[in-house]
Length: 194
Image (cartoon, rainbow, N blue to C red; front, side, top):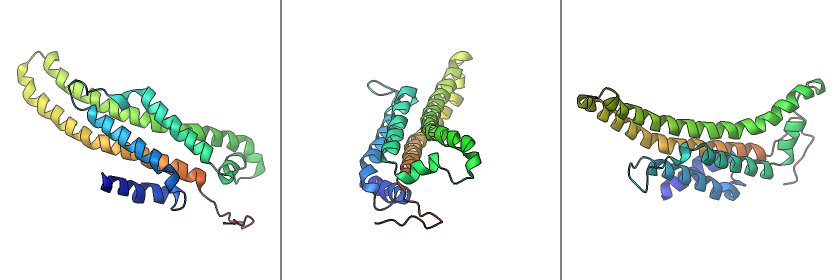
């Protein structure tokens, strides 16, 4: 487990959130990563008590995305809010830009939720469809084509299981990083005390 955790720390958390603040968010990022990864793997084991396609359930991915959203909003600093309510554009564009920025807050976690849900569901549907071909054509000979193909997709799903967990974690870290970043303003009118 250690190489995975160290990788997430050095390649995901620190580059996206920064070497000062990343420690606060590591527990969440690790939890999200392993939760998604393990549940994706368990979902590929075709017998009880496994086989539940957990992250293929939109309620689960929605909760994960909402947690990311809440962490982002509650840890966001004044620079982040300033960028949303006072974007660096001419004042006449504010009526257009501010709503877009506000919508942007919610589209990010929505995209997180849909990506995880759709990718995991698609893999499971593919395996199901390929195996079902045998029954649709009522031919056992189709098994020679369909079973190796389903096996291939299952092996691919092993990769996808880790990949989706990784993508979710990277994007969560990225969104949190954007919210907590100390922006050095180009005008230099804001000198940070620390």
